[in-house]
Amino acid sequence: MTTDPQNLRTVYLGQFTHEHAEGIGAALEEAGIAWTYKQFGRFTRLFFAGDWGVRMFVDSSRIDEARSIVSRLS
Image (cartoon, rainbow, N blue to C red; front, side, top):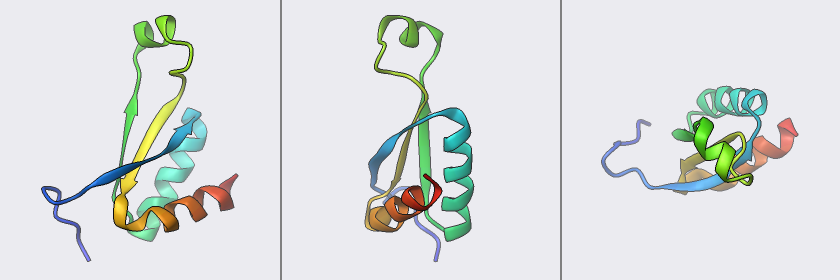
């Protein structure tokens, strides 16, 4: 089943290190879960200490599956 990008609603999955985000992204793709990410630039990290790593967002209808993938990989 393919998700229509115009109707896709995402929810926040979490903030992860770059290495962990890569593994989670691969597992989400393998499970067929649509996802996206936001990575902050150098200046944002410099001025906002809480913005480290990668913030990941997933298809809201599959958040429970995505959370179980994160738990499994942690």
